[in-house]
Each structure stands twice: as structure tokens, then as C-alpha cells.
Picture (tube, rainbow, N blue to C red):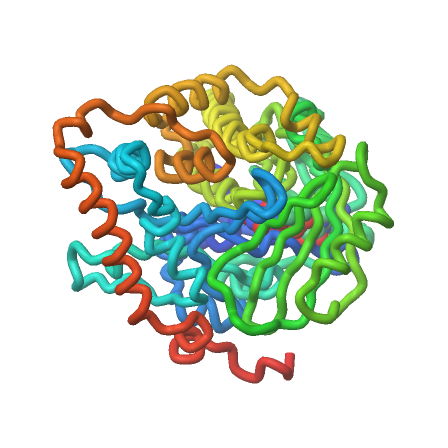
Length: 501
Ligand SMILES: Cc1cc2nc3c(=O)[nH]c(=O)nc-3n(C[C@H](O)[C@H](O)[C@H](O)COP(=O)(O)OP(=O)(O)OC[C@H]3O[C@@H](n4cnc5c(N)ncnc54)[C@H](O)[C@@H]3O)c2cc1C
């Protein structure tokens, strides 16, 4: 039986793992987390997708308390500006796209209406894409069945440093021991398994099982166990980021914004007390000075700190579990922040670890299964992200021309072909993003379906047109009665003393 579990790293990954394991292992396994104040955390990673609610629920986190403590805001989706072509924009919203009819997803009826000459934009047919345009937000009104107000789906933006602090508090109350110090050596047993980590002051922290949450350094999984890395830069050319916080400005948008730039894109994440900004770019096409200048020029408010620079190789660790060590977070790989998937991948890695938690030293079968699941999960998310770069009409810079002309994985090409032919999509291997996400991004990036499901033709044309127009009108009326995002936060989860911390 595993008795001592050591988590190396105290960023989002380390503290999420510590909070979850300490909750479930209830003191039966001694959990120690080692982190270095001198090295610190990466400090980006502030936008999420709705699945994080499952993680919070598992921990028993109160949503309002969590948002107050992390100065968080609500997120209804991601707005993509200039991705298809300069001047074009669309939103990938989390919620439903209109109601289903005759067992068919709404977008088939929307496509039929388009073919009949109707011009209602797809973006007018989801409350998650209409509300952000008016800077409005409320949580779903569960009592109002069949109303779009009951179908609002949200995620969060939060301050990464405060999130780690919030989870640290919970973890320590649940018995996790925190050791501050810089690891300078990793000791292995004769069979190669990790025995312990040695700190600068000579202390050695020993364990039976290790979770490598040391970020891109990957101290255990790569520097020690050398499991290898699969480089995906032929599809995902961005390999640098520069980040800077800026002053908060009104209105408070319930949405992450991603604006395409000549060699990458810029994020804008609104929090209660500031805006998180960053420019993700390809070093093959732009240098650091130019990327930083573009970032600063594109801010909505004054910068609040010096820009910070991040370098990465887009890809994934070939094995996330080797011997008595599992890598979670950036130590397991990093390929692209555009769809805010990395914190989600941390969450699924934690659930996977709990499902496959080893009984003792021999965990080869569990490791194989974890590595298999992680590979499939990463590849499916990768395809969705590559779609954003591939499906562009931009030809105004060498970066975008190369994205447009690149070869893509067969698995992605298959999805594009099927959608283009008849607007159909099937989820492979329980992949993260479902039909509604793919439809919005395909249409938003200019992959317009040429046909729709033939069963739509069983409905008279005027019924189809009325159905689509009515959907738009009901959503517009619902959004009219919603409060502003800022008012909603002020009423429910505003952080106290915003200027004092
Ligand atoms: C540009 C960019 C933007 C991103 N945006 C998003 C986003 O919007 N949404 C999202 O979901 N994800 C995003 N991510 C990913 C997200 O930032 C990470 O998944 C998340 O922050 C987890 O990081 P981590 O805990 O793995 O690593 P880190 O935060 O780097 O933590 C590593 C920890 O290991 C410790 N450590 C390292 N070496 C040693 C040592 N020798 N001794 C002791 N301790 C050590 C450090 O002190 C630190 O505590 C983004 C990533 C990048 C690069």
C-alpha cells in the first residue's frame, strides 16, 4: 500500500492535486507538497471551461466563496476576433445552440433556413453567445424549464496565484504538509523508481509515490525518468508567450477574447481587479521585442507590471506515468492555451490518477492504461485546436499563410470533410469538445456545411423559418432581462477590499 505521496510543485497543478488527493485519501496516505518560492509559479492559466464545476463540486467548494477569493469572474465562452479574416469575429459559447427538434440538433434547421434565404446569424441562437455581447450574465434559472435562461452554461476566469492560495488553504486544512525549498537532486531506487527529492538545505523528502507538478521543468518525469516528448510544432507553430496584467475597464465582459495577430494571437481575460493579457506567438515569425510591443499596444488599460516571457515546445510527454511517478499539469506537456483546456487536462489527470491509484510498488498495468488514455485525450484536444489555425482565410502574413497551407492530422481532416458535407459530427473516444463546440468553430472559421440532415426536409419551409426566427427572438428577450455581469458579481461574489491586497 502506498503510504507516502509526494507532490513536487505548488502551482495550479500541484495544489489541485493536493486538494483532491487529501480529500479522498482522508489521512490514510501522508501527502507532502514541495514548492519553491524562489522559482514561483508560471502565473498564467486564468481561463477555464465549464467542466471545472465538477472538480469544485468534488472538493465541496462554494462557488461564490471561490470567486471572491480568486477575484474571479464568469465566462460564457471565447470570442475570436480576426481569426477567419481581419474584421471577422465569432463566439464559441459553452451553452446550447437553439433547441433540438425531431431529435435533430438545432444547427441543421439553421442551415436549412440559411438555404431558404434567412440571414439570422448562428450567434443569435444561443444565450451564451448573445449575453456576452451585452456584457450580461446570470447563473441558470433552474426553475424555468424550456427557457434559454435555464440553459446558461458558465466557466470562470480567476487569478492563478490566488487560486493556488485558495486550494493550498483547503489542502493544508485537509492534512497536506507543505515544504518550501528548492529541489536540487532527485534520488532513485536501484530499479529506477523515484526514492526522494533533496532540497538545497540538504533535507531529503522520501515517498512511495510521486506526482510531478514541477511545470515545464518536468523534474521527475523528464529530467530524471526521461520519458520523452512528442513535438507538435508542425501543426501548432506558436512556442512563445508574453503576458502582462492591465487595469480593469468597463464593461466587465463575461468572456475571454482571443484576437489574432500577425504571428499568433492575444488573450484578454477580465478579472474583478485587473485584466490578464498575453500574446502567444511563433518565434519562427516574430521576435520577442515585436511581440511585446504588439501586446502592449493592444491593451485596453494601463499595464500594471513588467511583461513576463514564457518559452515552450508545443507537444505532450510520451508517458505521463512512469514507474512510481505521474506527471500532471505543464510537466505532462503543453501545446496551446487558445481553448483554455490545460486546467481541464489537470483535472482529468487527477481523476485518472484517483481511478487508477496504485495498490503498491508495481503499477505497470495502471501506468499503461493512464498513458493510453492521456494520449487519446491530448490528441483529440489537439485536433480541435489545430482547426482554429488551419481554417483561416488570412493571407496577410507568412505565419497565417503557413497555417492555412499546412497538412493536418487525418483525424481532423475526417471531421472537417464530414461536417462540410452534411453538418454531421461524431464524438470520438469520449473527446472533450462536443458537437456544439465544433459547429460554432467550423462555421466561425469559414467551414460552412454544404448540406444538412435530410430529415429536416420533412418539415415545411415556413415552419423551419418560424422555428429559427422564434429561437432568436426568445433568446433576445431573455437577454434583455438579464443583469449586467458587473452587477451580478457585485450582488453575489465581489471580492472585499479590492485595492488592499
Ligand atoms: C502562455 C500560457 C497561457 C495559458 N493559459 C491558460 C488558460 O487560459 N487556461 C488554462 O486552463 N491553462 C492555461 N495555461 C496552462 C496553465 O498555465 C497551467 O496548466 C497551469 O498554470 C498549471 O501549471 P503547473 O502547476 O503545471 O506549473 P507551474 O505553475 O509552473 O508550477 C510549477 C511548480 O513547481 C515548482 N518547482 C519547479 N521546480 C522546482 C524545484 N527545483 N524545486 C521546488 N519546486 C520546484 C515551482 O515552484 C511551482 O510551484 C497556459 C499556459 C501558458 C504557458
